[in-house]
Image 1: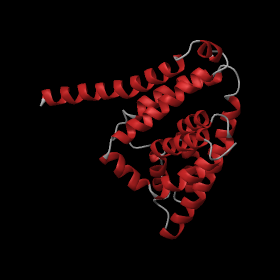
Image 2: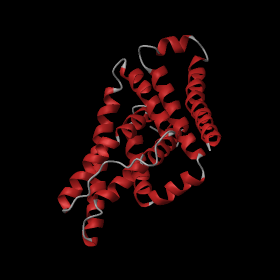
Image 3: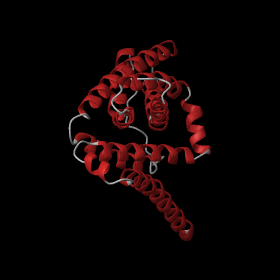
Length: 229
């Protein structure tokens, strides 16, 4: 695959964006899991924890990329992404992930890898869909985005707090990926190919439904809070 082709570059940018938006909680989990270790071991636990987490995530993504080639699973995967996109815009800030800090190097390492694998399933599904079956996109995307997430997590969180539109862009990217997964599934791809424009209509409907619906609900909620004061 030509790395300078528009499809490759757009897919790579989508994967990096999805990783940055979805993996903020994972960076917090890594810090929490290593918080009780001596300072000398914290950096070591974080480094090897990240290494193990990336390896596990790559394996999971490779498996999902392969499974999504089966008829019907792209359709199911696309539908599963929609609640992930909606939840991204409705996170409760007062709820912290239930992660116990490890008291030894190996317990912290185990916690980091297991917690990242469990919390990163949304990343795996979204990235597998955005990669369009190309594992090279997954590898390059992980190599670029993981260091950004880990070492720049504080900056990313501050940017999201200052510019909430970043979350809407990320949710829109997930909804767009979901639409392309649905329309690209073997069960329905022929129907979308026969009906010109329906694929783009689905993309617009899902992005507008997730982002617009979330914005409208947040506005109603804020209005109700102001009225009760």
